[in-house]
Image (cartoon, rainbow, N blue to C red; front, side, top):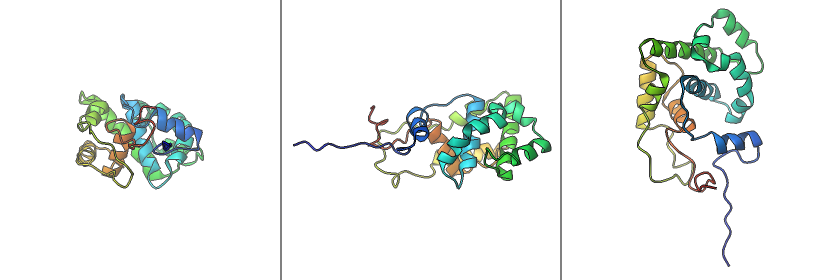
Length: 189
């Protein structure tokens, strides 16, 4: 008799929104400055909270942060910070809100220098790995690439992007594929 094994997602089983994020977004390449700015911002907002909380609030984040268009957010002022702090549909953390505005301004500064967030971000993509992690206990919280990315983004004026947040963004944006070895996505199902 052959034993049947069941596979489970790395995360997200049991909630349709979380399952869709896992299956259709996480670990898939993300390009474009607005999309990357959104992921960096949301990873920062997630710090200390459940990712599912962020996913549930993502439509509101997109609305109040002008679809994460860097030029639009870079123009935000004190009135916008007050507006965002009063909006219960998002995570109301002043430091994270101000970091998102700051990071939009840093993205615009990259544009002014003839560069893009996309170019800088993807320059830290490591060589693809041959192996997959068997469990989250094996998976690192940071890597040399995420440490280097964090330092470079901070050097360029970004905030709230430490090495752990940088690695989470690398995972979310497909610079690394950290689906566990037993995950249906890793198994091609």
